[in-house]
Every structure is written in C-alpha cells, then in structure tokens.
Length: 103
Image (cartoon, rainbow, N blue to C red; front, side):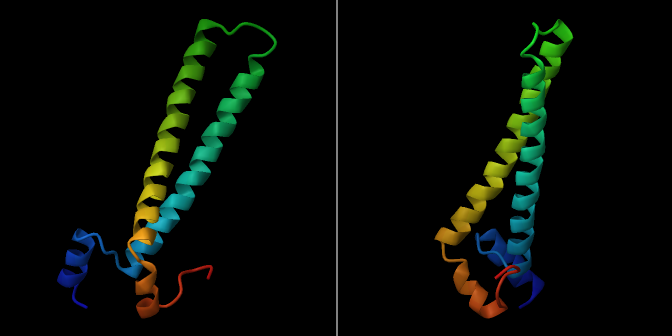
C-alpha cells in the first residue's frame, strides 16, 4: 500500500497498524501520567489534614488540580479514540496485519 493511500485511509478514519499501535501506546502513557498527577494531588490533600493551608499551598494545590485534570482529559481523549476504532471494526484489519502486541 502506498504512503498516499495509507494517509488517505487515516484521513477517512481508518488507521494502519502502526498508527493504531502508537495510539494505544499513547493511551497507556497518558494513563500512567494521570496516575502520577493524581498521586501527587492525593499527597497534597493528605498533607493539608493537620492544619489550614497557606495561600501558597492553596495556590499550589489549585495548580496541581489543573495538571491532574489536563492529564485526565488527555487520557480520556486517547481512550475515546481507541473505543471509536474498536466500535468501527478496527479488529478486522488485525487479520491483515497480524495480532497487536500483547495478544
């Protein structure tokens, strides 16, 4: 398959195997990033149990909440795209290209 045909298929919403694998890897990486950010948020919230937060601590907590929300949104976008591909029958292409890693 030529590169032009491959890129045209991607434009139409049909991914080739390499693009699908890359999207899956990005989804996994984004999940790990979200977990890291959520863990930092939980630690910061736990540190605030004993005493009221200073203005700086509240500001830091707000900034961390933004980072966690952005990490979650990025992961959910990758996840949504993977579900769309699964629903549209991407698995049929696995017959042409062989099993995906981990299968």
